[in-house]
Amino acid sequence: MTGSPAGTAPVGGAPADGLQILPVRGIGDVTAGDDLARLIVSAAPWILDGDVLVVTSKIVSKAEGRLVEVPADGPEREEARQRALDGETARVVARRGPTSIVQTHHGFVMAAAGIDASNVDKTHLVLLPEDPDASARRLRADLLARGLDVVIVVSDTMGRAWRNGLTDVALGAAGIEALLDHRGQVDPYGNELSLTQMAVVDELAAAAELVKGKCDRVPVAVVRGYPRSGEGSGAAVLIRDAESDMFSLGTAEARADGLRAAATLADRATLAHTATASVAPAPPSGAAIAAGSPALSPGTAAAPDRTATVARAFAAVETLITARVDRQPGGVRLMPSAGGASELIRVGTEAHRLRAALAAEGIETTAVIDDEGVTLTYRSSAGEGRVHDGGAETTGATR
Image (cartoon, rainbow, N blue to C red):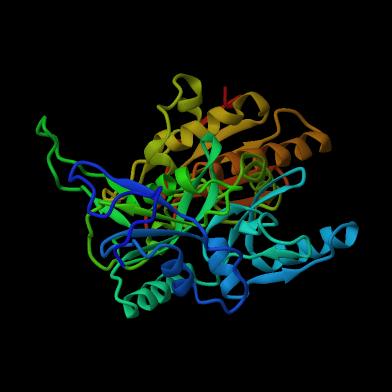
């Protein structure tokens, strides 16, 4: 398997300081049940041990029969597409007009769950492989059985949250570490790297797309010269879990989610991530702090200081509160600034505004309503100790 066809790169490894990216042409249309390893080897007998094969997920899906039959046109086609999208969606991240950004059951965040109508006949849609890492491992094993020890990267095209344009990324991988971890290394200036982990399989997928294209019927590319880095555990390690995902909703969806949560705020409900207080900006100065700055109660030195956090919550709504605000140990009491039933209703509204503002900062509260006002008791998030206001003071408003 060393003959290099005319027009392709010569046989032999790439220079140590460079890579070759070679298109694999002539694979043709792939159908359910096809042997991808046979098709690839037949089209590219010049593949060498150590090469990285970047394989478009679409031909993997076709070979695995991951197709949905749909009408060629008309409203029935859109209805069938929507059913397929619903089936592939774990949760909706964002919607804008006809575009849906969703998280698939694999964990990928993609437009339309990666469902594709290109490079397939009009009566079918192509779904993503059910398990791209498993697909990569199978293809690697099939090629190994034919005497080729290569890396497999299963790729697809995605958008990027902070930039226009699309790029190819790795959905599955075998025979390679997906991440190149530089943490602990020291740069030429003596600085220790603490966060740098390079998604090398994504970089390889993007590089391969330069010779594959979208309309050229080149579903496989070979990257030659990249050093092997172990068997790896697949590309799934690139998926952020819910705890580390800071962008799990679109802007409008996050705003709507917050409004819904505020509208139904229950006792001890928290809207914000508990890390909010540690990264929020400096607190406001002046009367807002004087009116609403609690301190941690004695004996909770290990708990974070939430004084500035509560002050921020007060500052967010202080111009909307006309009630008298009575600071009490561990909370705050709101009372009407004038008589009448309407003023009591206003106090209830303002208390809810304050509860929502506190919850947005990660401070839970319990609300107690009586005939003369509303008392809010501060509670920190679980395990952080009780939030406490050390003084008692009455002001005409939070201003």
